[in-house]
Image (cartoon, rainbow, N blue to C red; front, side, top):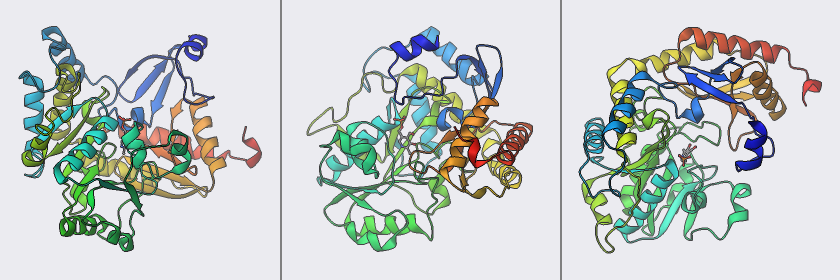
Length: 397
Ligand SMILES: Cc1ncc(COP(=O)(O)O)c(C=O)c1O
């Protein structure tokens, strides 16, 4: 299977991890030999309820037996998408009442940029250095990391950058700015938290100049940081909220959410301001609905903060400089990138799944399913500590 994988399926690195999957359940992925791998990554924060959560599987099964796809986005009234968007609105501040469902995080970012330009009639979009918002051309234009995007230029024009957490840069947000797009917690940069009321200050500046604030909650959203959405920690409500990843517990989805007034500007001049064949797909919407109900009706969100404490108390080691992030979105920052690589690769051999962060080579991500048990956390952390104990600089490669 691996040979065919390398030959027929497109690759994005010369050295894929290449684990050969049989099935997955709860916090474990099983390989073709039937060995269990403890998953501390959760499909890069997407498997919010672990693998194959029974309520999500049941929702998918029930809906796919009724109908799977009937019409492009927004033409027909379909119960799963209506129920989902209504329930989501009940958990959000009043201005975030209307949801546009799409197929991925990056498409949701594209939709949010278009909406901001269309609504304000302005063109400038401001993003942050070391930001990651996805990989299509618009999202890539917002990426604050030249090395990963220069090969794809020219990208979309009129994008400017500010330093995340730097109040001095707020003056760059002006009457020309359509929107400021920020990750609520910077992910690829190494799980950088906003400091000193930074998001509140950005919100205030946007209000002063009439720019929209777009918050990308694709990674921290859906309970991962101890609130349903992480902006709830920071006294700052966006004009457009962008979500995805953990939203459907492992199925492809994204959405952007705004006020009806702002969202309605996609209906005219031109009409069909954003269209997409599979956005709002009923099977995915049913999975999203089951996921949101499970996250909000269980104790998972509160437990996230207890689980964070457990991780922090167990992951103490001279080779770990600090642990960044919040809840179950944690970055182990090691002494150097050699140790980070050694940890991810050695853990993989020992059937513990860890992964890198995009722009911070010293960091290793820990973003397990919200459903992970305390025993599983202890098991994985003990493994990490013993791997670090065994580290010798020459052990690399
Ligand atoms: C903060 C953030 N924004 C956007 C995206 C893009 O989402 P997707 O990969 O679903 O297009 C990601 C994915 O990693 C992300 O972490």
